[in-house]
Image (tube, rainbow, N blue to C red; front, top):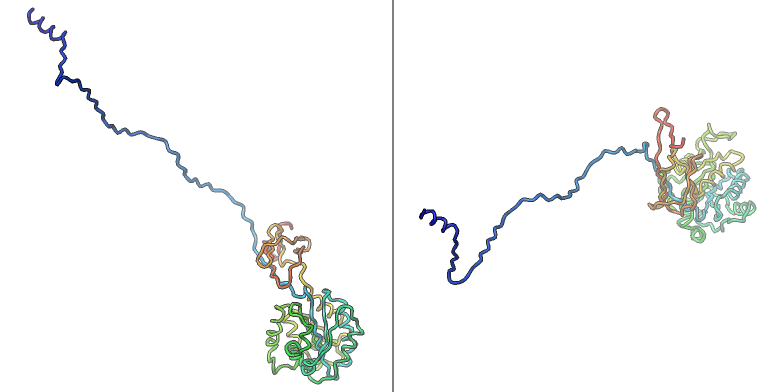
Length: 338
């Protein structure tokens, strides 16, 4: 009994102890590392296969440099004045008249010079100009006196470079057309052994805006002459030079030079349109003028031609690029609209 009461007294009583007379409160903080999952948005590239339609066909570029004849044309008729040429005077004048009537540009100047360079370098004839007619041409022809040399190439060079009067009317910013007229072969072979030698010089004039035609004795099989012509009189050098420049050759024995002269005249016409080499897909056409994209044009599918609403200026490079489809079996070209 006495032991039980002692135990109960211990349980039921409490005793406070104070050390140093003060009560202290101690706070204990523990740093606990906790892993927490936080959602983060990340852009992940996704590749999706998409079928992109690809236009079939080949790419082609047609181009040209605008003729300087858009600013005018200077014309030299280089005429053989040896005695045998007198019988062609009527045809010659008719040919000049045909040219005057057919010239596509309003600003033209025309002079006849001798195929003898000694006379050509001394000529002081004022050129025919718009408004002049066949009578004026006849008066100019009459000033060309008889001369034995048939050196057409040399005459052109001497007149342009060494005739003081030529510089008073010939223009560096106009096109240049030379028409050779002779019933004998060209004989400037000392100064121009090869025809290409003359073309190299002539082709460098007027930024390449040069043209040529020849009225000469053609090969016997093509000639309408009653008497030949003799092989030594065939104008092979004149014809070669003219062909190299894409010009027109007229048979001197033809009774009417006008059709050929008219064709030669039309060749100097500035480009106002360009017929495309292949049948173009209309929506693929792009036009560049001196490297700049141009919108001053329209395409006419019926004749596969690009027409310029603003005509390119002299010396400008025009490039027309487009897509076309070639038919494998025939080689014919078809566009998307055909």
